Length: 248
Image 1 (cartoon, rainbow, N blue to C red):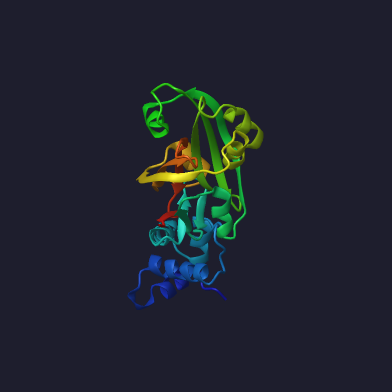
Image 2: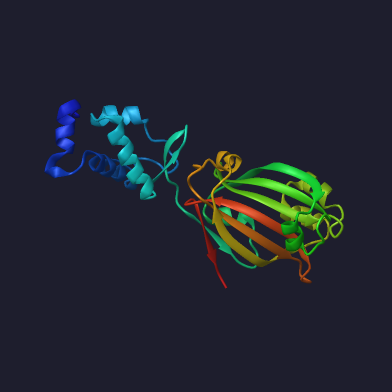
């Protein structure tokens, strides 16, 4: 029979070890053993407090420790979840979302967030080698791995240089196939710049990540075989779900 109430607290506190630490160790053991699946939701604080016979403040301290260790992620208003394995995002000459996800034995999917023509901001114009205000096509996409949000990517294309790219993206809803439609059979990564910043409320909601956890922020330039820029991309990845790895 599982001890409850004062008996449970006495058991947890034996040897002078703090109650919250013993709770953290018990949950850690369940996570490491696989008893709790990656991505699975933990019981509520109230349920854990009842299970261990302690108050919710003690449970919360244990969950904070597990979060600090990277074993769980805490989402405001949604609860606590077992952290998934980190996906290595390999930056090489050819970087394709679907191939990246399948290398991790996950199923890639996603949905289009936006598709429109607009005037290039100074940052986008610089990335594409255009003048400020030139017409560009924005294709924004939420990338999923086994149904779990893993990236928000904003792809910018030079409208005049790639005539028909808007219609191609609307038809294909995938960058590689759309570029093939407008005559770009292959494209290569010219540069990748990585920084980090905190998510906006919209980004945090889409990526199902806490507002307090930074995103990896990547700016990418892709060129065709002749070295002409065909895309400037801005991608946001949730940490610690994704880490960027550069290879020669």
